[in-house]
Amino acid sequence: MTLRELFQYTSTSPWPILLLFILFPLLAWALGEAAHGSREVVKWGYVYAVLVYAVCIPGIFAVTLNLYLFLFERQSVWEANLLLQLVPVVSMVLTLLLIKRKIPFRLIPGFGKLSGFLTLIAALMGVMWFVDKVHFYAFTYVPFVYLLVGFVGALLLIRFAWSRLF
Image 1 (cartoon, rainbow, N blue to C red):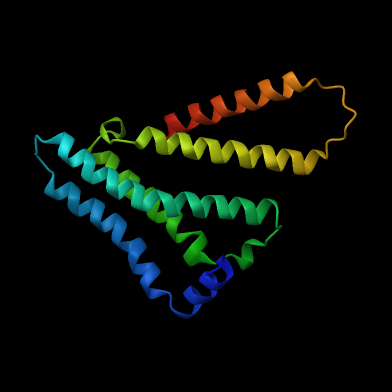
Image 2 (tube, rainbow, N blue to C red):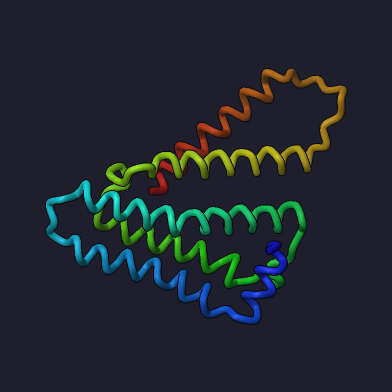
């Protein structure tokens, strides 16, 4: 199945995908109510880790797809498929906000790896966009070391901004 076929399938049958992305925040809220007052934070951390990965993988994919479509394919905002390009992101943000109210992210196993993965994707998309816009030629006065330092600096800046966001 290609992405085009997935987009066409969800256009004809949107309810399974929509219910899935509505389920994630509801599940986070229900887990928060069930874990209220529980002293077994480690056990709930693993339960939340499964939920975080289940909602963040499609959410990160949707963010990456949106960036690609808008930056490289020059897709108009008016042509965006809301079900596959907006709903996963909204579901991810709502779920993460509900989880953050109950347990700190540092107690969720693997959350740092997920944010590192998002940082890497954001940095690579930024570098690809920069290269697409600048049109580097073989003759340049900028040493490669400066470009490498700029890339690492962008990685660190994105990582710092992500840690401040959540």
